[in-house]
Every structure is written in C-alpha cells, then in structure tokens.
Image (tube, rainbow, N blue to C red):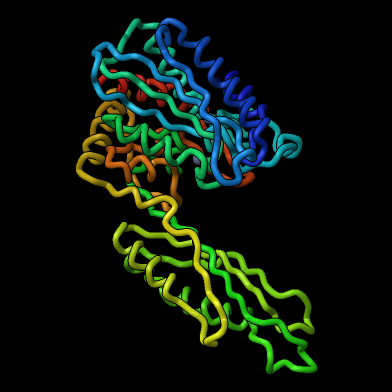
Amino acid sequence: MLEMLGEFVRLESPSDDPDATRRMGAYAVSALTRAAASFLAGAETDLIPAEDRGAASRGPHRRVRIPGAESGARPLLLLGHLDTVWRNGTLEELPWRVEDGIARGPGVYDMKAGLVQTIWALRALDRRGLRPRRPITVLWNTDEEVGSGTSATVIAEEAQRSAACLVMEPSLPGGAAKTRRRGVGVLEVRVEGRAAHAGLEPERGISAIAELARIVLAAEALSAPERGLTVNVGLIRGGTRSNVIPAQATATVDVRMDDPADGEALIASLRKLSASHPEARVTWTGGANRPPFVRTSEVAALYWRARRIAAELDWDLGEGGAGGGSDGNIAAAAGTPVLDGLGPEGDGAHARHEHVLVGDLPRRAALLAALLTEL
Ligand SMILES: [Zn+2]
C-alpha cells in the first residue's frame, strides 16, 4: 500500500492542470485494474469528460462500475478525488517521505491515501473471491478541490441510484468518520456605479466601492454562528485608479450552513442587499454550492455498522462533523445515506504538515472491504 501511495503522491495532480489529473486518473484506474483483475471482470470503465463552464481546464473524471452478485440490487458508491490543492513542483519542497510510521507529501492525506485504500479493499475482495451482493461504483473526479463544478451532476446522479455512498476523504484528525458536514455557498456580488474625475466633478460619479463596502458590512452582519450560519467576504476587487470615482467593484462571499433551509434563507437575504444610490446597479450570482450533509438516522445507521466492524478489528471508530464541504454533501443532497471521512488517519489537509499514519492504512482497507461485503 505504501509503495502505491508513494507512486500516487509523486504524480502531482493539481485541479487546474488537466493533463496532470488525466494522468493521475489513468494511473489510478490501471492500478485498480491490476490489483483486482478478477474482481473487475465484467466491470465497465468510463472516462467522463469534464464539460461545463471553464470546461477545458479540468481533466476527465473516472467511473468504474463493478457488477454485484445480485442483479438489480442498487449499487454502493465509492467516492474519491484525483486532484489536490498543491501546484506542480510542490514535491521539490515537500518530497514524498516515510519516517517513523508517518508518510508525507502533497495530497497524501487529501486524498491519495483514500484512493489507495479503495484499491486495496477491492483487492482484498478479489483475493478472497468475495462478490458483494450489490454492484460497486467507483467515481473519482478531478475538480473536488475547486468546488466540483464539472462533476457535481454525475455525482448526484450516481448517488441517487445508489443504496449508500462511502466517501474516502481523510478522516478527522484522531481518525473519526464524518457523519455531517456544513453546507457551502459561494456568491459573487457586482456593483456598477459611474466613473468620474475625482477632482473635477466627483459629484457626477457613483462610487461602486463605497456601495460595495456597505453591502459587505451588511452581508457579514447576516452571520449567525449560534445557528450554524456564517458569512465571509473573502475577496474584493474594484476601481481603476486613485483619481477616478470607481465604476465597478465585486466581492466574493463564502457562506457556511448547518441547516439547508437556514442556508437558503440566508442566501435569499444576501441577494436582497442592494445599493443605497438609486442609480447604482447590484447583481448577485452564484448560490448554494454544496448543501449541508445532515446526520440523518440512515447516516447514523451506516456509521454504527462501520463502528461495529472497526470494533471487530480492535479499534474504536469515532464520528464527528466537518466545517468544510466535500462531494459527500452533493451525494447526501441526492437523498442517499453517506458515510464520509473513511480515509486513513492523519492531519494537515491543504497544509504543509499534511501526513498519514502508515499503520492505519491496512485496517482502513479492511474496514472498507468488510463494509462493502456487509452492505
Ligand atoms: Zn479532499
């Protein structure tokens, strides 16, 4: 497993490099095919083009449909992503290395270890000649780290036809699975004012920046952390030069929510924020991007099953919530029970201290293999 993990980490695959994520996808699928050849007999392997806005900038997604023992049973969906947040060349500063039971390198925890674990779980079924009742769909996308714009539809479709979705994203620090995640929305607000010379005739101008500044404060005032709602204006742009009343300004707003209805209400309130000057134009675009993944009773049941299997493997699988969204949110919104964070224990997603605990890799693969067999 470690050798494969090293190969995967050394294949850098930033979301915005389509050739790199294409290579990573081809490599991972061929590793899967080699590791579990007889289990994959009769499987359908598809390359799903990443079409949509901003299109050509993403590599193709990969889907492998593996037949189950019982025809007509609803499949189990195994989700993972091939992309990482790390730009090409990161390996030179953060090389792949294994020391004292800890493996490091860009994307090792988020989430190349989860891909390796998926492959080794299926390999275990292959070696033991086990054929789960349900078909298994493996879906690996290339744009998870940039919001899954070109893969959300296929994830939702696959989730909808599946009996359950297991997300191989990293576990929480400490190893717990994720049974809920906050929802995420991204909006952009654009203000159009009117340019004018700041010295000669400032009164003829309408400052888009001043209007935007009021909107930013009003937007942040809609945060209600006690109800699980937060608003962050993370990016603003505007104006052309210091001596011109700015005609344009835009801001990008990140919204987090625990409850879908609260989130929708918050987004509706944001969209109502307008300018104080009657001639300034305010346009809002965007909206909910990953709805909240709520811990339903079905999610809890899935977790308890995984926890019991982990106990048989002599370890205590905890559970918790994550503030960040993942493709688990998209699957959960399709009404499918989701168990997320089944990837190996470690820490430092998106950070330089990113690592996984090597000793956790085999038991996680065993947990996944047993879950697939039981479900
Ligand atoms: Zn991830």
